[in-house]
Length: 267
Image 1 (cartoon, helix red, strand yellow):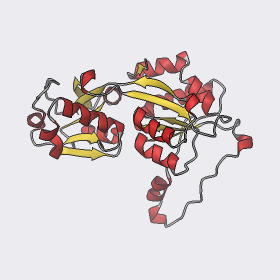
Image 2 (cartoon, one colour):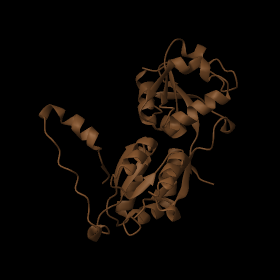
Image 3 (tube, helix red, strand yellow):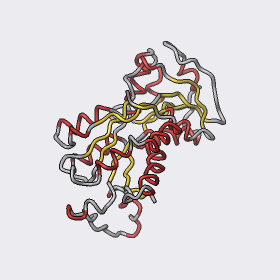
Image 4 (cartoon, one colour):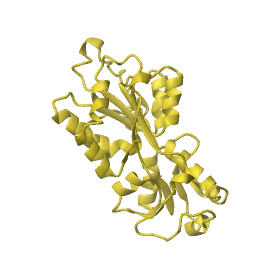
């Protein structure tokens, strides 16, 4: 059974009305590290697929993994501030580099695991047609509505999206219409609810929400850098359960789950 970790901020928000102060999370001792499941900090776009893989990992006789899903940027900063985790699974190489530069991951364990695509999506109840080409009239297609993106200043999905729009020469025309979400799944929800006329998310996110969103088009690979998902064991956790989980991501069973969700294998 998969378990989702909540950050302290989320817990505080959930119990604010009770005016209670939560006790600090118990940190597993080194002596019990092999008996507990790995704590995995993973990009929000991996929520569904890692939940399924976590079940497979446990069914294979391993301790149940515990996941914390958020923007890669937010998770990297939590690691930097001392948050306890065994594995960091990022939606881009930049945030993995960020932790590498600060000696916070074990560089010998770092590996590129997955790739993804970037799509323009619209609410299923309000679709439109638009060719994803240089100079496209995205602003006109929005018809005064909002364009939902993960925060392009820090979150990988938003950074890829802005890069693609700049490459195609249309960022300036839509920047004022952008609603910035804390992560790509939050950006997806704006599209699903119709609060945004369109949004740019990963192809896997659009597939997961296929009942509520429609893909208008896929951004060409040359319009942005390769969408790469690296994973690594955190520094000082080599003797913990993280390496076992990292190895499991390359097992055939995990690879099938990734492929079914629409992820590509890293080159």
